[in-house]
Length: 196
Image (tube, rainbow, N blue to C red):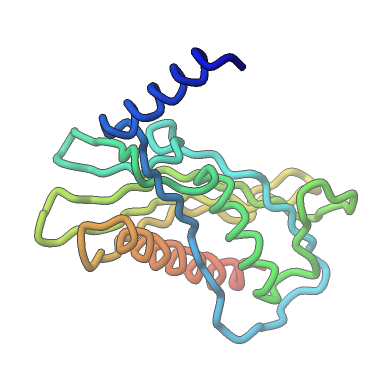
């Protein structure tokens, strides 16, 4: 590389730094942990947790904030490390694997035949900042449990919850998202326990 090109590259990098064009994006993950005692229920149910879907409005990794009744905005600087549907699918799979409800919860790509399949659809996932004094996280997920022999629906339910965010920061919002998902998965486990 000749000296003119190197000088030009150095000038461009310096210009970006001085103009504030270098962005500091922060990545977050959900830290949901099941802390209930494991309860054995069924030893003949093998579950396949399908990759969840997500409403298009919330499929971006960037955080979404609701500002008023019909106005939303995305946060360029704060985002999930991986796609929200992938992260929630993984957390759900791990939670149900630790629950004792199933003989086995399959990992993606497993060659074992499942007896049941769980589908999920993330309907809402956003920070609700309409009330500036009381920011919240909002999450809504619909689950469908299918018995594969006969393709019959065993259970279907939509769970919606909110959790207070201590302050209007990304870190606090993620903690509130954790609370939302913990509440939803706790309720899902309790309902599945009744239906299996």
